[in-house]
Amino acid sequence: MRLEGKVAIVTGAGSGFGEGIAKRFAEEGAKVVVADINTDTGKKVAEEIGAGGGEATFVKTDVSDSVSTKAMIRATVDAYEGLDILVQNAGLGMSPTPLADTPEDVFDRLFLINVKSIYLGVRHAVPVLRAQGRGGSIINTVSTAALRPRPNLAAYNATKGALVPMSKAAALELAPDHIRVNGLCPVAGDTPMLEEFLGQEDRSEAYGRFVSTVPLGRLCQPRDMGSAALFLASDDSEFITGVMLEVDGGRCI
Image 1 (tube, one colour):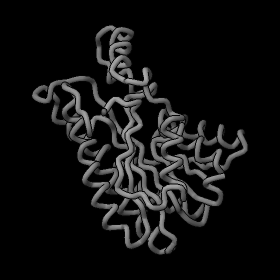
Image 2: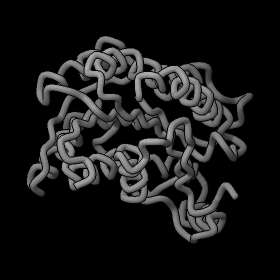
Image 3: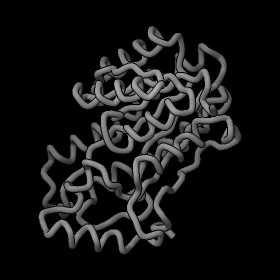
Image 4: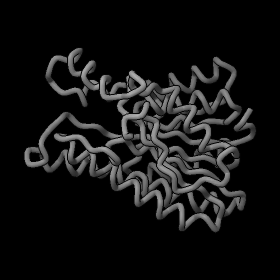
């Protein structure tokens, strides 16, 4: 049990990659806070973890809101008497749109959900991790979009690109406290966000065309992200910080 006795928060854990990470962590002994803005899906994931013999609590969270994020951290400490791992996975996608045609409100919301939320999580989690004095692991879901951006997703690409220097700088700032900060860069996955990314064209054709660009021949699955996050959360990676781990089947080569 690689996370035995650890307490983990996973944001956006009500579906997709976050669900895969939360369930993988629970399998390895972590007490998991399933944080999501969607009450129905969040509770469902927490209940499924419990039914499988794991331990999980759902906390309704708006990661773009400072008060809500602080409350998430406090609820975790109240429930499990500590915090060891923060996975900042919640994010927002977009339909393919040229940058010049991207509405300003869409641009602003993308940066609010995908970038400011990472700052808020660090701002509210780090004091707790420091006070405990036992280090910790912060894992940010970045994207291959930060490393190999695609046309017509410029605003989304920019939000994910911003997380690379933010994560690396935070890794340097927090290293003296033994708080590691790393990123995961998945290729698009079979998650609820995929349909929006494929756009309005024939979905089956667009799906096949995208899969053909991945050398290992498939998209990222939630369990792929769960296993990668498990490595970065566990003591197996105790000397790794500031890394952007590609979970992409070779797409960024």
